[in-house]
Image 1 (tube, rainbow, N blue to C red):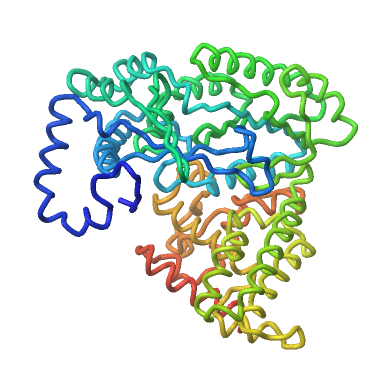
Image 2 (cartoon, rainbow, N blue to C red; image 1 turned 30 degrees about the vertical axis):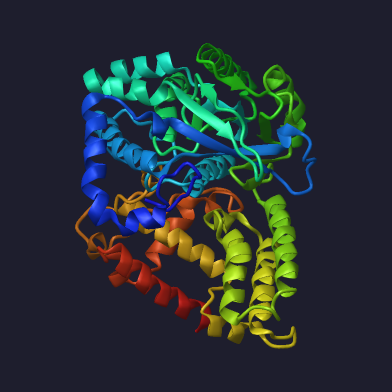
Amino acid sequence: MKSSSCSVDILPHSVLSGSITSIGPTLLSIINSSLRQGCVPSYFKHAEVTPLLKKQNLDPSSASNYRPISKLPFLSKLLEKIVQNQFRSLLCKLHILDPFQSGFQKQHSTETALLRVYNDLLMASDAGNCSVIILLDLSAAFDTIDHKILLNRLKVLAGVSGSDLDWFSSYLSDRTFSVRTDRFTSDIAALTCGVPQGSVLGPLLFSFYMLPLAGIIQSFSDLSYHFYADDIQLHMSFKPHQLDRLSTLVQCLTQVSDWLSSHYLVLNTNKTETMIIAPPELHSKISQVLASFCPSIKSNIRNLGVIFDSSLGLDSHVKSLSRSCFYHLRNISKLRHMVSSAELEKLIHSFVSSRLDYCNSLFTSLDKSSLSRLQAIQNAAARLLTRSTKRVHITPILYSLHWFPIEFRIHFKILVLTYRALNGQAPDYLSKLLIKYTAARHLRSQTQSLLVIPRTRLKTKGDRAFQSVAPRLWNSLPLQLRLLDSADSFKKQLKTFVFKQAFC
C-alpha cells in the first residue's frame, strides 16, 4: 500500500507500518469481521475533502476553479484493497471486464490506450480513409453513480449475493464527508450517491457500472472506442465517398446519450470535442452531419494529456511540450546555485524528463523538425545539469550522463512495450497488433522470434504506426535479446544495446 495521510487517521501510516507485527492480528480480526458480517465500520466511511486551486492564475473566489481532493482513513483503504483484489479476480474469472477500459487496470496506462487509438488512426489514413474522433466528457461521473443500479448489477452480472452483497451495500450507504481548509472544517454532510472519491475500490466499481455502455458501442461494428475511467473516446473511419456511414455514428451517440441519462450520468456537450481527419473539402460536409451532437469541431484536441492534430503529426503537442519544458528549465536554472548536483538532477527528471518521456511511444510520427525541438530540450537540460556552455559538443555530455538521445528513448520505450505485448504483460489490444512470423515451410527463421511487418501504402502515415514500427525495431534486435524470457534481463540488456547504438 502506498503511504497516505488524513487528519482522521488514528495512527499515521509510518507508525502503523512500523508496528504491524504488534497490531496486525487486531487489524486482521477487524477486516475478517467486516467481510464475514457484510458491514463496513462507520469510521471507514467518512471522507475529508480539501479544495485545491486547479491553476495558480485562476480566481480563488470562484468555487468552480477548485478541484476537490478527497482523503479517506488509511485503514479503510487497506480493507478496500483486499476487497478490490477479490472482486477483480472474480471479474477476470467471469471474463466480463471491458478489454478497452484502460483506467486503473494492471498493465494498462494512458500510453497504451493512446498508442492503440493513434495506431488505428494512422493505419486508417494509410489506407486512404477519413476518420472522426470524438472525446466525450462526463460531468462529475464518479459522484452521480446510482447505488441501486450498481448493487443490482453486482447481483445480476457478477453473481454477488448474501453477506458479500450486504458488504457492498454497507460500503456505499451512510457515507459522509466534511470540507477542510488550512483554518476551518465544515459540518459533516451525507453522500447519497456516487462511488467514494479517493478510494481504492471506487474506480473498479465505476468501470463495472459502465459495462453496458461498452455493449451499446460494440453493437455498431463500424465504430471503435476506448475508455480511460470516465474519459470516453469514439472513432470511426470511412472512405471519402462513404459519408452516409456517419449516420451510424450519430445513432451510436444518440443511444450513448440516452443510456447515460437513464443511469444518472451527465454528458457535458460544452467540453465534448471532435476532430476530423479528412481532406479540407470534406470538413464542412462531415461537420454538418455531426452538428447536433458535436458543435465543437477542432483542428487539434487534448487526449489524455497528448494533443492530437488533424495532420496526425503531433506538431501542436511538441510546441506545447517545448514551452512547458523550457519554462521549467528557466525556473530550475535559478536554483542551481542553491542545490547539489544530485538534487538538481532530480528536479530536471521530475519536471522535464518525465514530460519528454510521457507517451513518447507515439513520437514515431514526428518529423525531423519536431524531433530536433525535443532534442534541444534535452540538450538544454544536460547543459544545465553539467553547467556546460553551448560551445561544448553535446554528445559527450549525454554519454557521460548515460542519457539516451530522444530518438533512442522512443525506440527503447517501443521495444519494452513490444516485449511486454509478446509475453502477456501488456493489454490484449496491443498484443493483437503484433503478428509472429511463421514460414510456409520449415525454415531457420521460424525459431528467431520475428514479427510480421505489415504492408503500408503511404510512408508518412502507416509506416509510423505502432504495428509497423514495433516489428521493424524488434526484428533488428540481436537474436539473444529477442529470446530472453525475463523482463528484467531484457530491459537491462536492451539498455546496453541501445546505448551502444546511440553512441558508437
